Image 1 (tube, one colour):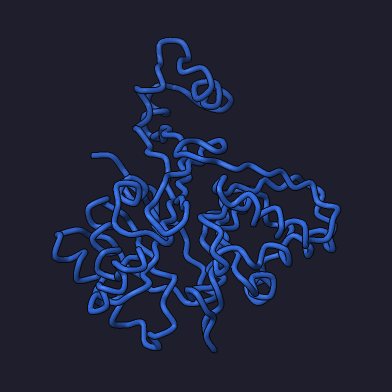
Image 2 (cartoon, helix red, strand yellow; image 1 turned 45 degrees about the vertical axis):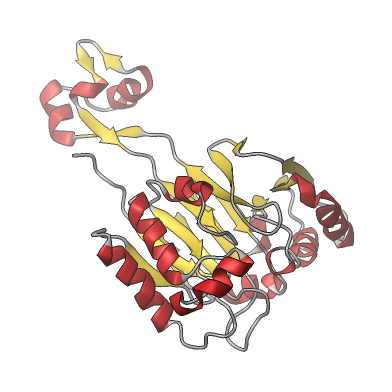
Length: 300
């Protein structure tokens, strides 16, 4: 299963209909929880997400709307008897804040802290990329290795059947048949999250080639001056970011509480995508949304 479960979509303060940030990415057997803001534990209950599903937690930065829900989530995991280790990734400059939050949680969880102070790999297939905000901030990119898709008609023509198919995948050759003869390249899927940043090279690097990009859309385009002052993105900037990066699906979130109707922000992001001539699908997230990763891309 690969899907994004949206637990909260509001920036800075919650509203009557939107909770603070919180996003769970189900990726095969792993559950990556991004930016658990205040109230995330309750949002997980509403979304039907058990605490046992969380295997890794990633903080983009230590502003409260992105991390104040951490003690509650960790305490619930202890209460539910989670036995597996949980890795926590966060900017190194936020060490004191993270230690304080973790210290509030009920002890008993095998929590492993992983501060990082620069862009680069932080776990297998997971990279942190520096962004431009008022405090040290990183986006994250999860990348599946490229592989190959077997073509049944070619396998049959080559006489490769049964256990030999697995052997061919493992060894790359069975007799005179090479894996390249009976398969086509399969690009690995890519997910990226861009939160709390002005337009920057890091955001562009994260968006590049993403099948699903979760991006902040704090302000409408008409409030671009506010976005620039506070180092955030507008909806149009998020759309342009996705278009240039060739993103498959753009999910907008982290909306300012000043906007009760998100349709204008959705429209501004879509306009930016269409102006660039891109085919990116745009969705303005609501709390509780479950968004499947798009179908795998095929190479020409």
